[in-house]
Image 1: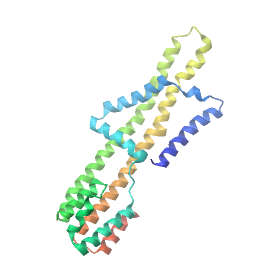
Image 2: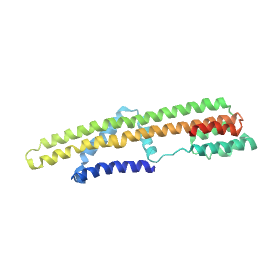
Image 3: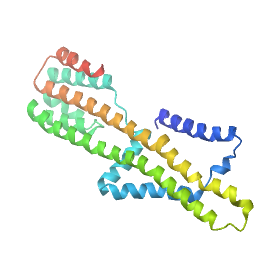
Image 4: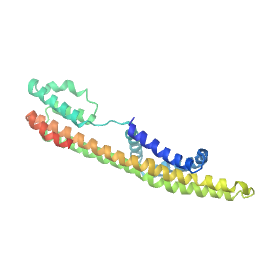
Length: 246
């Protein structure tokens, strides 16, 4: 679980609820189950209509990544490449075979396996380069689905508010409840605007940043593996890869 994401969401929620309470409002005034169903259910449904099934599923998986997915350590990656380079120079390329199954990242595992199989640096770059770009583009499309949900949510909030007002206006026999009913109707607008600007759009932007970081990390690992296949000097490889940390 990424602590900054959780802290940010809790701080945003606390700011809204706390500000409402400081202004004399009650917390229970912000609770409206029908409004939540309209906003959250309608937003998910609109995103499902917009995106193909696989793209929508990818977007939901990316939400989990934003909250607690893997983070990439460039320094550790360079150290790993240097250890592989030293191992190859000492024991030969087949010595890397025992390292393949230890890799958590499928991208790195595939590259290492190609290296063990004796593929040329050009073959490694061509194969992994295509995989790298495809993965980035697919995940960015998933992030845009989440971003689009941030556009739908406020509109669904307005729909919820209008439906609430319709319900209130249809029951004018008790004027004493009119003000409370109108106030409750506008809770849907708060849900829509709040979930869009405090959750969905920030998370979509965070996922885009995570995708870019992963791309740079995997590109660095690709360059390192290709350099090892060419038998380059470890010091030269390390100096080149240091540029990814700046």
